[in-house]
Length: 277
Image: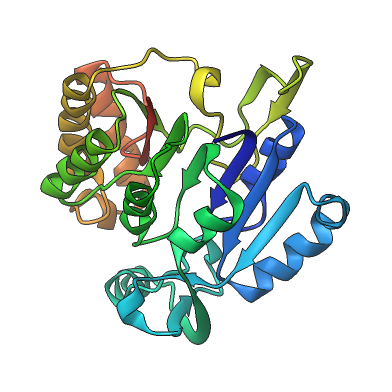
């Protein structure tokens, strides 16, 4: 395991990679969208030149997909690029049509074998997060920390995520609201101990590991948290009646809900599960 290495599965515009580099880590970043890759090659040209950053280009998919993969690139919401047709149809129903392109397939175990097992791996690849997580089963070592964008529709699928994390040896968890990350400033230390302040930009996943200012939970405690979160997903999430209401009506309902329950967070937002060995 390389204690100075971080993986960024879902590079996008480098919102997270920038933070990892500022912390002093070397980064292996994986991205499918060629336009975003070109942006990041310009943005991080110095880090690429000295080998602190490697960008792996292509779409993550199972071996059964073949050598090339159909990727649904979303021109209006680039963060929603996916190989999953159902996800693309869902986005289209919300007014965000995709266009299809053909990309080479990335085999995740090959990436880990090439660059090594990292200190931390961030997994945010729309629709295939579990494929990345499952690839770790092929290696005797595990990252000290990892994060995955959690399931937000099917609670049984969320339990499967925790089952796999448990099989991989992860015993401590943090359930992190992602909507509150952009604009947040954290005081953290680099890998060599220097203090830095960093403000997260839009679409960033935020800090990881011990830099997250909330306690670690057991599996049962984390799942209990998600039961309350899924109740809010049913009331306020993408498939709820609330999601189709005018903005003014949403404001009235959310204010009333918070007054009645004492809840102060975003409604509903979305969450990452962070895990530690």
